[in-house]
Amino acid sequence: MTVVTGSSPTRKKIMSIIAHVLLIGASIVMLYPLLWLMASSFRPENEIFTSGVSVLPSPNWSIDSYIRGWNGLRVGFGQLFINSFVISILSVIGNVIACSLAAYAFARLEFAGRRFWFAMMLMTLMLPYQVTLIPQYVFFLNLGWVNTILPLVVPKFLAADAFFIFLMVQFFRGLPKELDEAARMDGAGPWRIYWKIILPLSTPVLATAAIFTFIWTWDDFFGPLIYLSDLRQYTVMLGLRTFTDNTGMSDYGGMFAMSVLSLVPIFVFFLLFQRLLIEGIATTGMKR
Amino acid sequence: MATQVDNTASSGAGRVAPPSFWSGVWQNHAPGYLFLLPWLIGFLGLTIGPILTSFYLSFTHFDLLTAPRWAGLDNYMRMFTNDPKFAASMRVTFVFVIFSVPLKLAFALGVALLLNRGMKGLPLYRALFYLPSLLGASVAIAILWRQMFAGNGLVNQVLANFGIQGPSWISNPNTSLWTLIILAVWQFGSPMIIFLAGLRQIPQDMYEAASLDGASKWRQFWKITLPMLTPVVFFNAIIQTIEAFKSFTPSFIISGGTGGPINSTLFYTLYLYNEAFGFFRMGYASALAWVLLAIVALFTAFSFLSSKYWVHYDD
Image 1 (cartoon, one colour):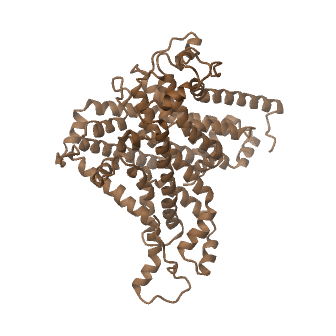
Image 2 (image 1 turned 180 degrees about the vertical axis):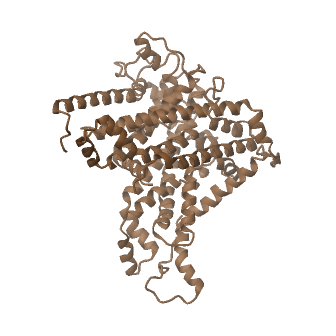
């Protein structure tokens, strides 16, 4: 660090204190709704709206709201959690396999039409999903796939989330080409190079894609809303919405408790992998 | 599932000449297409096919149960001349985009500049500010928002402590859209991270040279930081605008699927959903989708054309 002219050490200190005060204030405002949600979910029903703006735990705290909420639908929330996990994990597998295959072709293989297909892939990043929505729905309806999880999962195995192809292409291009060359000299074909060299060196980007896929699929509301109509097939997000409609916003405690539970998996990923997530966003945002 | 690729099909480097022209073509191009196959099937079957189909459907009346009936330009005519809900949803969506995107970017840039002073605790702040972006799209947060901005909700209780009597934000058509704008701005974390990465790319010696010349911090910001950051501003603006046009879940949950009160939260996507899956007017909904595509395409094209004049790429 060089000493910048025109600012004394004391002034620097004052500026730094001001910055910290601003940031701490902003953090409190940002996180306050989440803390309030958390605190309210552990309050007895009669205290939720009498404790005002407090985010401190109630002295009479209880898990009644969680028990009521868990059994608030005809199907227990346990089933909904299993459904959400199944869809999210299958989506992760699909995205990691299909997107890495396509990304390897774009980043490392020579073939006629490569640039054209790559441009097409980038175009799909900009495409609003509403444009393909209705024909896709009709197509899946004719296949008899509506009210199953297939329309939500199968597209992932066909690399429908082009964003991750883009992410992986960026990463693969950064790996030294000499590795491929050396392996080819030893007689390895493209499949061996992909499987033995590229994938093992790409764990950071594969993990980033896996985590984002899980979180986005877990959060997805629109897809399940359209394709799932049987309560036993519902995801957590769909269940939450049904719960609020059924109870007519009367069982606040149960609603808050289930809202908190629905965020737990995302929050766990955030705690474990926040550095990976933040780097993933920073790198794709920068390279064009 | 992935197909096994024959290991002997190498790219032909340093091998004997292939026996015929076609086997050479096969050796050179087959591996690429085999790796691309899953994506290619998805692209042709789930993207290109549906795009062309929805273009055709937009000129028909289609209720999903009977075959589409040709309608010519009826859908488009109705949209632009005789559909108050279409006009309302356009207005709502544009107000949302025009207010939420610049505010979100301003917060993102402001906090990124504060954090970029090489301060202690940067990773912690960065993570805290990013958390809402990660959670924000979920139904749970929309439910929380609906409670916070209710007449007796958290926001009005905070205001009451200052002696202010707040309106019932959600059920008042003048304020309902603002609750959704605030929710969008609350999620400024991801553009902030991208701004931080951009700020780190600016060479430090530019600032040193400028301060030796006696340029104030303020002047340095306008003459160095902002021009150097324009590519990142451009990128963030495009991504966030397209995202804002596609926003659906918060308006659906907060208005209970209606877009009310008095269509004040009727996002374009919500209107399209209700037309398609509420009234089964699939032809009309397809036309709505194509208008959305046209808007996004026009916006993107306009952005790229205008970027020549304000985005600085150093080669």
